[in-house]
Amino acid sequence: MDDRYTDDDFYNYPFPSFTDNRNKFARASLILGMCSIVLVCTLFLPIPLGALGLLFYFLSKRLHKPVDSSAKAGLVTSLIGLCAGLIFMGFTVYSSVQLLKPENRDVLNAQFESLYGVDFDEYINRLYGEE
Amino acid sequence: MNSYLSNAELKDKAKEKLTGHYGFLIGCTLLSSFLTYIVSVLFTNVYTYSNMAEFALGEAISFLVSLFTGVLNVGLTLIYLKTACGAPCSFSDLFSGYRNRFNISLGVSFFRDLLSLLPGLAYAVPLSLFQLTGKVNYLYVSIGLLLVATVIYLPFYLMLSQCLFIMLDFPDKSVKEVLQFSAEIMKGQKKRLFVLILSFIPITLLACLSLIGVLWLTPYVNMTYTIFYLNLMQNFRKA
Image (cartoon, rainbow over all chains, first blue to last red; front, side, top):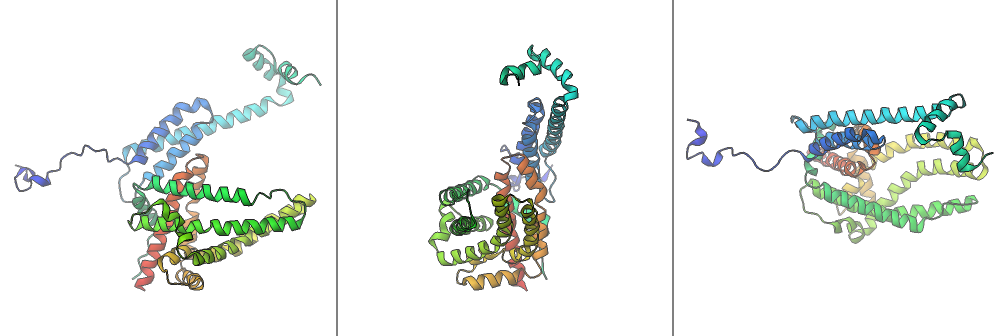
């Protein structure tokens, strides 16, 4: 029989802990990482959320101690969210700059018309008047 | 035998000491920043100036304001020291620099501010000339002078970096003794502290990207500096 069950050692029995001792930063990192992936469609939000998730991962990491599984997941999800956010943001800025170039004006007008029913030039004219 | 902790060990100790204290330390940092901001806005509202005399007056006022608000740093340092040593602390400790040994706190704050005035002025004077005259050359001079002044300033900053800890740890020392002792214990340790400061750059960029991450980063960085000082003193006393 296991020594742990003898009367003398009863008080040393390793009862399972019902309190959640996992690192709070690791959990926060995981939640923020997941949020950053889910909110990629908002363009701006995944960058701060992913960065905060990464920051919390670094704050949860301890020397000579194994990294919490939720912290590892937090690292991965935050990195994915942050990178996706940066890529989407970069692509949006790049495509906006490209569309505003005079040689791409026809494409912009066509896209604007398909979205809003009026082309970009006409929309600007309505807003600011013809010059 | 010296047992200086590595940067990774200092940071790990800081994380250990911060467990369960983040909320309080974030609150203290926010309160200190808020008070400093309010006082700065009230007294240094001289953003537009038309000549160098007004510029000099504005700089003098902002120096005096930073001198008095700098005493808050003494309270913040006390809070970090107490937290690192496991002693109980409260929000009132933030104002301990004004309550206890105000002269010493003001003296140390004066020398620290005077030192940081060097790169500030080296940058601000040509920049103000650029704003007044519109000549782009002044802008280049401003950037060049800032770089040169920072190189000169850095060793002195590192030398006097432990002043606030020392004045709290040795209450009977005068301002001169505090400055001298800081320079003494930092002999041969400046590179170590410099590397420690540089090691926070990536995580600081991350915190800036996350907008509110600075709230958690500030206690972490300050606690690491506190552990650095405690480790430094531990080895200094042994030697």
